[in-house]
Image (cartoon, rainbow over all chains, first blue to last red; front, side, top):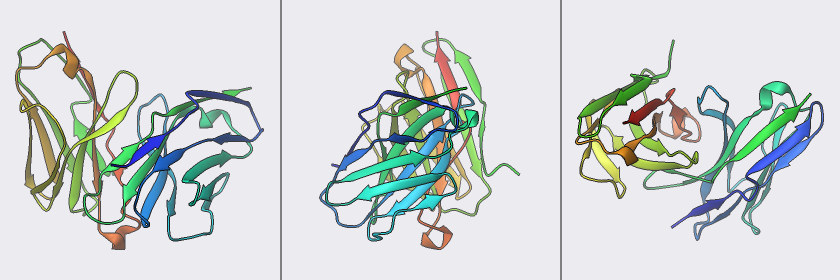
Length: 115
Length: 115
């Protein structure tokens, strides 16, 4: 079974600085998807960024980018120019390419933005 | 327009009661899910339906019974509620690859409190 590990329960960063959230996963599959979701205090789950495992190019969405290291099974999220609205829980998630499409989540990282 | 909606958003009830949570999506997706987020924020899949057919049934007590009357709706009925059922329950939906990478879109969650 696949597992996802986020080793940083909490992180903090100064506004306008850059922060990187770590995620590692374990799988025997070669094709899969990886996602980062954001959960602000409103508790709404918001998709931040996605990555297909067969693509070597790292995904980027505005201030959010990932560092996908397939061999190391690592999928970190970099937030540039941090803003107060980025404060939230961030969840890394794995989805198998075929078959049951459930998301397997990491434990989450609580990100605090210091003004 | 709300893409994935859940009712109610808050539910407070006593032990032993039976309650239902409803979910509707207007995205045209054919797969819907129920996730449970516990007090430590950990998210885990409970059930998934594809075209009204149950495809994922994780280790969940029999007191939990999902029902999908059509592709756009997935309800969760819980019998004989227990204190440990207190959590936030999320509904989500996803489409075929034509909709993107099969990423899942979440409802606002239902906070269930059992007293």
